[in-house]
Image (cartoon, rainbow, N blue to C red; front, side, top):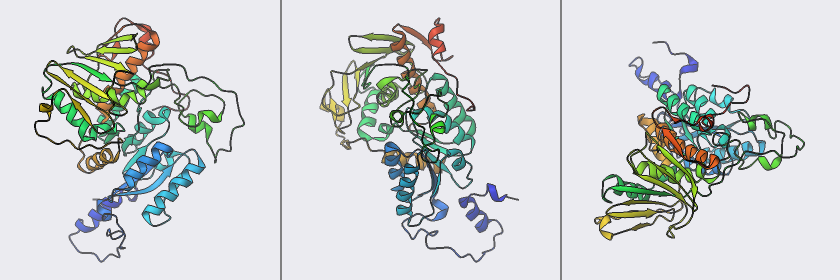
Length: 427
């Protein structure tokens, strides 16, 4: 069998050499390749590229670098100082100066040696960068929110189904034991018939992205403003947009906390209700500081800011007719009865670390299995958040068809399911 040089990854090269002819071939292999420098042998490593290395990206990249079967070889960011900072971080861990830097992440995606990418750009890029990565044959770990609207959510799921690539959304609480145990209680009927799910939205405002006074645009090598905007609508440079600003997030809406921190909590509620492949069918506008939605099975989802037990950030609560459980980022659980523990000791891991989530992703890259927050899961939890935002924005009740993925009898709401991409960006 002929294998072209551009198609031959490091791992496949080693397999080809060892198995292709059945004859032992003398090779000069460095101690590093054999895994003597703290890394797994080269044949077992996942070769990683990192795209978008701001505060969150730096943290998650550090989680990847803790794993001895990961070798990061390239970083991409539109900001020069972030590229240089990330390179120093990677080179120090790798013990060399080989990490390459790119202003345009598409050059990183063109590298045939890279198996997987971390995407932690601004949210205006998450969906498109993930789709382009999948089409380039890369597995993807993408920070949330993963999409800006309902149509992008559907596109994300379809792309990863079609390409067979592995996707993990950065909703890392799916891999924390106390949240997983709370979900288990709900799914296995230990709470009785489930009737209400509570999620913390961390804000329920919606607004357009806005416009700021023009400022002198930096040199492209220092900050590539046009590439930073990417598929989002153009606007003049203003430095206040450079960090933490989410262009047109959520069907033309900034989306507030429902899509940002709130997507973690909604995602856990979807999981508890075994609704990972659907979404609520009714959405109600804000009333008395709450927003609610109802699933086809009658379970109600309530997003509320107050009324929580002191269990840390991102709290969720699941209630059934025989009991309830509440959990938050402290790592602790509150239960309606100690009997719900059934003698089990649940590990208390506070601070919502991403290390377990990263490991889940890496294991699935190797086995080709589905991570806990795969593209189908992310698609539907994000659709739920987008639909909640649209109900808030329009301030009226909406009915939703989770098979056709459209609002019933509401043209205005349906127009908010998607948005145009700025030229020349397209898929």
